[in-house]
Amino acid sequence: MKKIAVILSGCGYLDGSEIHEATLSLYFIEKYGMEYDVYAPDIDQYHVINHLTREVENGKRNVLVESARIARGKIKNLDLLNAENYDALFLPGGNGAAKNLSDYAFKGAEVKVLKKAESVIKEFSDEGKYICAICIAPVIVAKSLGNKKVQVTIGDDKETAADIESFGARHINKAVTEFNFDEANKVLTTPAYMYNAKITEAAEGIEKLVKKLSEII
Amino acid sequence: MKKIAVILSGCGYLDGSEIHEATLSLYFIEKYGMEYDVYAPDIDQYHVINHLTREVENGKRNVLVESARIARGKIKNLDLLNAENYDALFLPGGNGAAKNLSDYAFKGAEVKVLKKAESVIKEFSDEGKYICAICIAPVIVAKSLGNKKVQVTIGDDKETAADIESFGARHINKAVTEFNFDEANKVLTTPAYMYNAKITEAAEGIEKLVKKLSEII
Image (cartoon, rainbow over all chains, first blue to last red; front, side, top):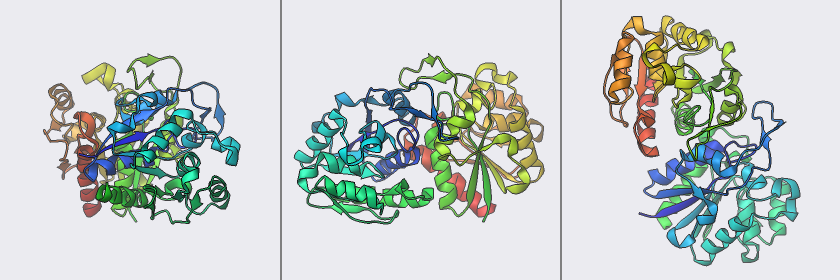
């Protein structure tokens, strides 16, 4: 059975992993006959956002500990992720990808990707393994693999697309129910909640991406 | 389009709503042609549990604010829920149902259900509307409607089943991929993560339950 390494970045779309994207990714990975392990970095979240008021709250939360809520405790420190043990890498979205796995939410085109996340992305790519990224997560794949001219989608947001192209990658506009497949670089991406989408729309794009992965992996 | 009121109880299976059950419920409700609004009580969680270590943590979290992570901010105070505006009530599981919506986790058969949750359950039942409950949540439906001799499943846990029968309700053993339909009382229940289940197994039971609801509602 093909094994997928999923990287989470917290628990909640404003300061961590987008919960629907993460849950539906795990569901479809298993539904299409693959299995997964979940990882997250053992670092503090950049901040905590109240998801009712959308305001920053006092207090610290740890990315690994909060991601464990989505993974039901079955999660490992990202430092332990070894590409050799997996057939593909999977990055759900949410602002955690832009605030915890990188500083894209604050630095834009000057983004730096978390060192271990970047090295893992390069490792999967160098070993010719598939990389899947949802929502805003394709930004950190594009940044990490910029010199390989990867082709990704984050939907149709012009500013984010311009940032992606500034890394040397190429951006392709896609609808929420679609995904982009860069065959040369083995990178699959879908916009999900980059759009103000319904859960079934986000799920449709994610399901199509995962189904495709299951056919080619 | 039929409208479902979903009640959440936090964000994480040890101290709030079970995230997979909640997300998959929203997904299947929409997939089978219904729409939903999400509610949660504006109260402190009973406690906060670290989902990595399973130990109680310092700090307070609010059930409505944490549930907003799953609902992506589109959530209302449970006090505002009026059964007249909906065709069915839907209660995902997780320990939040047994710790925040009730004190079942601590009091067992002596459980008290949160006043507003109990009145809402009675209201939907009195109006002849469907009530769906997942995982441990059937306990609070059974307690709230005990005198109606409702028939529910929480899987096959004998102690919980005995508590349910002590309320005057009837417990039916079901597998994780099955659901129970009490036609007389219009109550649908499925065990989900009452079993140590895979996400696709929990999803199968929830999907069958929601599909049935969509056919009869």
